[in-house]
Length: 144
Image 1 (cartoon, helix red, strand yellow):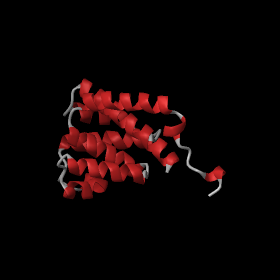
Image 2 (cartoon, rainbow, N blue to C red):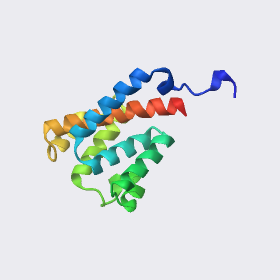
Image 3 (spheres, one colour):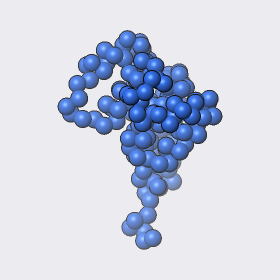
Image 4 (cartoon, rainbow, N blue to C red):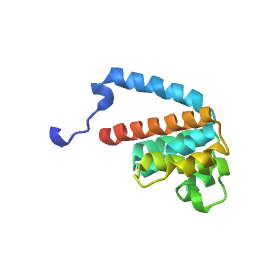
């Protein structure tokens, strides 16, 4: 492979940025609380962003934290199955809206749906968690 097509290697070229992002991710994960939801959000965003590295990592982490394989297998069709709670579905809808950023998406009904299950601090943590995984997905896609 020629140097012009090599991966960017963000982690090696900007170690201070990587350390700062890792610290921010740890703070977000602490605020997010619910590990099962955290894994679902990370996996769903990674699927949408087609980051195979992140999909594999988040599948492994979710399984290690006790997530059921049947739920992981059905995540891609979460709207059409009954294995996810209403709260999880609201968070997954929010994840998709903030990952795809369609200018035609009306976020107001999604916020209303979220507030049926989460407080504003939890929604803020979820939003930050979604933003972080989208950032990591883009870095990892560039690096692999």
